[in-house]
Length: 276
Image (tube, rainbow, N blue to C red; front, side):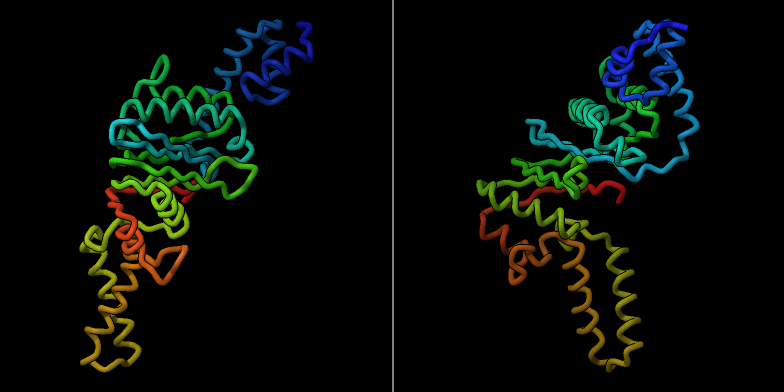
């Protein structure tokens, strides 16, 4: 059996983020050759990737970058446990994935996975690192946001974890402070659309039918139904459309009013929450 030192095991673990036992066994099998041991660990991990394919990935992080050409990129990189999510290897992988996805200006997960990354593709990069980490890792979501300026807000729900909520706000105007405040509002209020006009017609009609049914079952007068239904639809729009929402810092104002008073025009936004 090869004479494997604690220093060699520690060095390889720090390099790859692998477990103590797996690292020691690989070094023993490789007769102390670190390069060969690395290949053994990668091969072992690659075989495990297929077994992990059906596992759930409810942990991970969000990351974003401004691309410098009127676009910004937001990604969610997911893994199985918070232990891996907060590790340097996973955080470093996210940085490499984000750089590659942003360089390709990818707008879908499919395009992002096919984007060039180092010696291969983003998909290959993720698979290779997942093999070492020993967990399922997946690029769950990608969004290319367009705008004249951007405010990027990454929120940690726990001080021990990387950012779990990410917002990119695309806007025109000069009030960066208010833009950041709107980005923070989005992280909290989770709007799905920018304006009420952006809400799909089928979603509006489904909500209209529901509130009309509820209103009828409450025994409201038939003549009053249209006004009551429209009022309740207004509440629906305030829930899902950013510019209709009550501003988190002052609920007497709408986000639309705050944006207007600040001389801003919101062109686009995206919000990801890990696992949501």
